[in-house]
Image 1 (cartoon, rainbow, N blue to C red):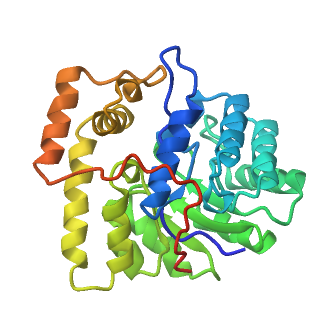
Image 2: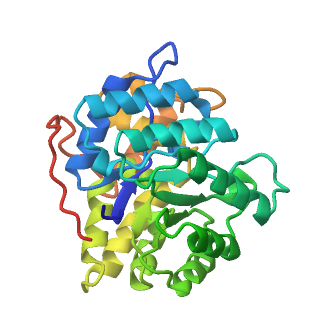
Length: 314
């Protein structure tokens, strides 16, 4: 099985007015994202994954596959605080033939050592016990409270070379991403956690990005991934940065949902689970106006075809 490369969206999770996950809206959004030539990391940070119950994640994953979303384009986030939940969700993803899983280390206990984190990943791998398992490590120390060190990556690759497939580096520190790339581990895929680092990542030998704003700007981000060697690449990167920085001026998840809501003409897309709060209507309008001043758009949102063929550049 080929590994992931390119642009991946940590897909926003839509909710109903009574705060239940809305699988129909999720399927529709995933189909549109696939039509824009990006893959799907459901249950990422931007997905409000840690506000979802294990049973909800399993049910949503089932709904996506049953709706015709090809699991070859699914990289669900399966890392939980609890080892049994991580194992159960990861096993389910493998059973559904998801191409990979994006796995947080156990978080909250911020004094966890490399030995402890290795033990957690090792226990998960051993308990899942399936040769089809492919793990993309997820390093986001700002929220997880722990970081995935170079030494830990080396140890995991050495022990489980066929399982540890890559990493999403959301440290926000280019020097950290660069240090991972400089190790040149065999066929180890390195994704930056924001498209603002995409061009640097590709020039340094990386594999793409897994970024929150792919939810609203997938085609443009994919275009830079495709054109990173061209003489237009720096200009394309600058345009992406403008959109990203505009959204970052607001709480990220409510802001992204507001943009989707506006362009889909669907007010319920603004719904977030506590502890998040939806943007005020005036603030939503302000954000959209700023984006539109940059020439931003979200085309072809009515795309519903489920048997989408992606061109895999790897």
